[in-house]
Length: 144
Image 1 (tube, rainbow, N blue to C red):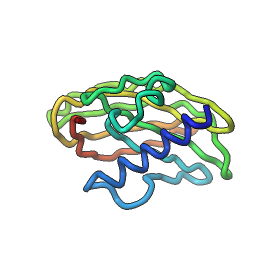
Image 2 (image 1 turned 120 degrees about the vertical axis):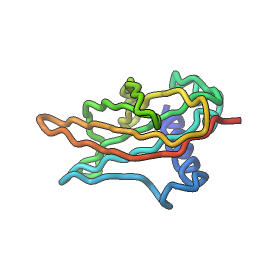
Image 3 (image 1 turned 180 degrees about the horizontal axis):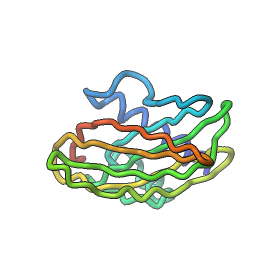
């Protein structure tokens, strides 16, 4: 399963490099001593065996959001929730599920991508009593 983590992270970074509106490098937000790494990409960036192992639907109309929470250089278990809104402010709940393998903990969710558009994501990460919120916009494209 370590291969799954490596390939998911590689897919995230590759998707970032290909998206014109993504700042070079990794997306992250720091809240005190906790850093939240996040990225979203079309599920077709995943190899079929990796998508299957991660229980993700690999389709040109499915996006994936991947979130990891780090404290003192180590993965942190947290509660991750979120929504994605289109330009008409129609909101869809992101159903994150935790994946744990070989010292890595991350949270993944999928959402529908029917057409090219910019969407607004709101991700809430709760660690203990503290809730941190990340908001970002991402231009999305159906895959090939």
